[in-house]
Length: 221
View 1 (cartoon, rainbow, N blue to C red):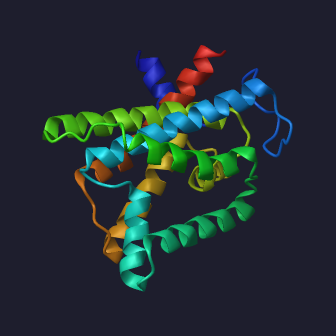
View 2: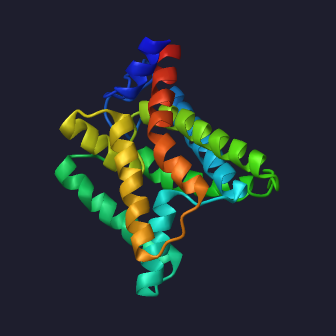
């Protein structure tokens, strides 16, 4: 148990499985690879929607988008685009490559969130709100494990994480946590609104993603 916990906390490599694509820019991947990619992204979208409907704090990156919107007068949509564009520019020095997964990430997660918001619960009791936040973070971690292991290109922010991981060989838990904390601190400084759910997400998502990669790697080993 302790060995597994240490392994998860120090995980530095996304597992390469039988159904993983050999390279990110693959236009003709196996059907099973596409299946797990889509499955992972759907889970990711459901997890994000659970955080939204819990209503005790938006994600760290949304705080950043919100803070930029307050400072610049732009809409949230425009600041989201600006941040995503800047993050993608950072891929170049990190030698991170896009792929089918990068495109599907942008499209599918948004669609799943919109659909899930109609069917997920909106708890009123604070205890159940907390449970929903932790459940959402857990599901995002599992979804990330599947879609990152497919190796068909990450989303903009996950690509920043994997790119830094490849260049520094630091653990995924550490890198993801530092990225989320950087986003929330910058967003808060710019005037973004931080809730308890935001802080829980920032401190827990790194471990959750590593845990998801660990489970996927172990289950399909």
